Image (cartoon, rainbow, N blue to C red; front, side):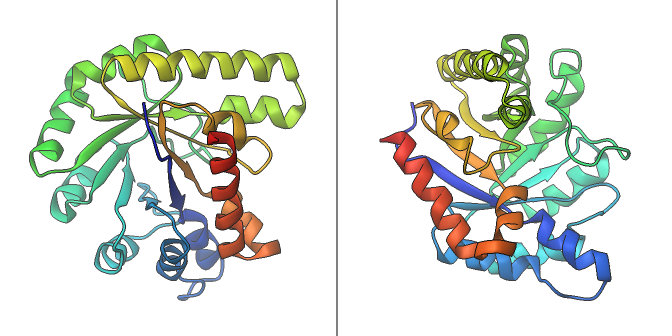
Length: 247
């Protein structure tokens, strides 16, 4: 079980805003350094195949600038593996990716793709990257994560957050129970447990309260909330809510 729960701040959508106009402003590296300064335990950035937000130059700049770990999100492609092997970030989180999606829609299918994913992971582990797999809260997928050599699983909390936003109390409770069962199983299997996707001030508490969850990765909400209250206060408030739930 995890003691101090870490907060990873995803800065992808600072780059989305920058890319809407072109140029260099706002700078996602500046946002990452601000997050680091107010206590973020790590920075997450997803280099998508279509480069819709984070660019290659951003990843290199983050590697140079950060003193906290970089969680480098990528799809399981040869291009992305080559970049990760060149950079050797602290962590590589493998996520599913489709060009037509607005955001990551679900978890990886590990159980049906074990041989390919195992071969993909081995070189990353050999250069010292901690490899995480972004998965649904599903027992079969967690058992497959062990088989392919992952160190960490990040549970997709999107369905829980969607049900919560709709006010569907029964479905929210059912999804939370499913996440609880899977965090306990992942811990028993020796996997470090992370969680993320869609978490907000209003719904983070029950996920943060799960003792097995070592890290939450939160981005879109924090960047959006920064429009209203500033990035630093938004991160501080999220940290406060996580600690309150943990207590």
